[in-house]
Image (cartoon, rainbow, N blue to C red):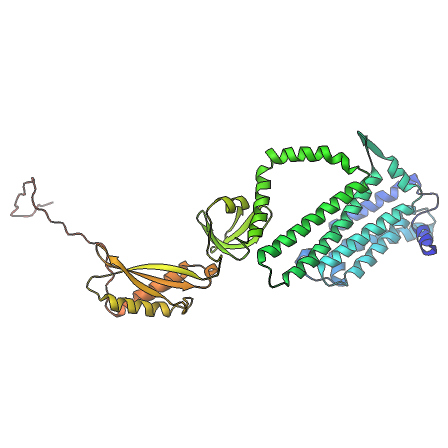
Length: 423
């Protein structure tokens, strides 16, 4: 307690802050804007995956320079000249504590934990410093307004924000740990792992919201009317949103579509990158990412090329001339297919004679692939090129439609010209 009392004496004067010292707050705001403008870091924190004290100083150099300048002004005006600078002194110690917290939290190598710990510590020290100011909490509680039987104060809103931030951080940290544990369970499918992570995050956000509302002094039973209005809105305006959300949960539960599957829907062929609450991200072979609503994956016909396994059979129609030997053609086609890299040897390729067409003997090559996510058109093109080269080497003709026209009779009189037309 003695340490807390001394810390409180350093932060705030016993009689509270003098309103005439408001110029100090204006000075601090001016310095903050100037430092943020001149010393802004060029690289964002999102560009790095790990933390270190040196990187923290690089990202927050504008705040560090701002604290150094404000501290220099405080030391010159306060202890040296003797001007009362309570607000500058308050920020001198509080800002220094924030810098120490940031440097210590940066020792945590993982960015999520470093940012989370620092954020919670910033909130706690800031509110604790505010609570040390005499009658500050009482003044915030007096700044209130009433909505019916519910009274909302500035202190209640501030406490709610703090409670929401803290519980949300705890919830996200717990969900992150659970998600990491779930990913290590080999018996769970990919869609079930995504579903568990989503449920944990939703529950965490819901609990954080309820705690924040309760901390603001709002009676949760008073939210029944809001719940009814929300239900009415869901029934009319948000029907599609709820439908997509429920459809996403169904897809994750029945495991019919999961991340990594190769699907085809409404002319879109690609593999599922991830499943979100409202849509599924499908990336095609040309790099285009389609955001397909979850409801369409439930109500429309979907071809899942890798539902049971990744084996996919591709049919390649081929026509050869009637002058060619079909036995030799089938043998050459199988040799060309077996020499293709992505064509499986077990089950191996097969070639059948489908029928006799108008101008060709119709053959069909059937090959198996184990990686449909890498595309089918490239394999079909490679196989056809090898068949073309093989047929050329063996003198096998690939026919094209030809028509012979025989004129039996005509009502047109033909004039025999002894000499050609000069034109």
